[in-house]
Image 1 (cartoon, rainbow, N blue to C red):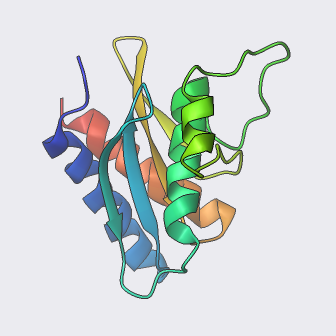
Image 2 (cartoon, rainbow, N blue to C red):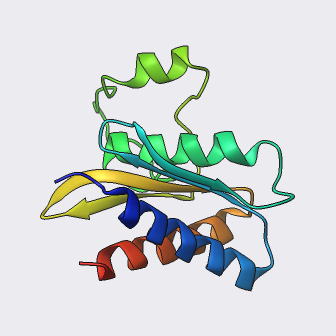
Image 3 (spheres, helix red, strand yellow):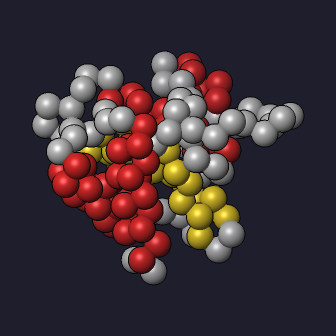
Length: 136
C-alpha cells in the first residue's frame, strides 16, 4: 500500500498544529518509500532553508527506514535514489526531524520537519506520525 494524499495531509496538519503550539515556524514534507514527494507545506515566515531541510530529512528517513538523526548502519548501502536526489540538489539530511512511516512492518515513506530546533522538529514529526498511524 502506498501513502495516500489524504493521509499525508492529515500528518502534515498535525505537525503544523504542534508547531503552532510550540510557537515555531516549520516546513513539513511527506514522501513515499522511493523518496517521491507526496505532500509539502510551509508555514508563513518559516526560515528560507527549512523547505530543503524538511525534504532532506524525509528522504534520509525514508531511505534508511530509521529516524533521520540516527547514525547509518555500518555497511549500509546507499539507497538507489541517492544519485537522483543529489542530482536535483536535495541531499539526504542526517539531522533529527525525519521519521519513517511504517505500516504492516514495511517502510511506506517518511515525514520530515525543518525550521525548528532538533527537539522541536522531532516533536512535530511525532505528531504527524501519530496522526498518520491513528488514521487507520
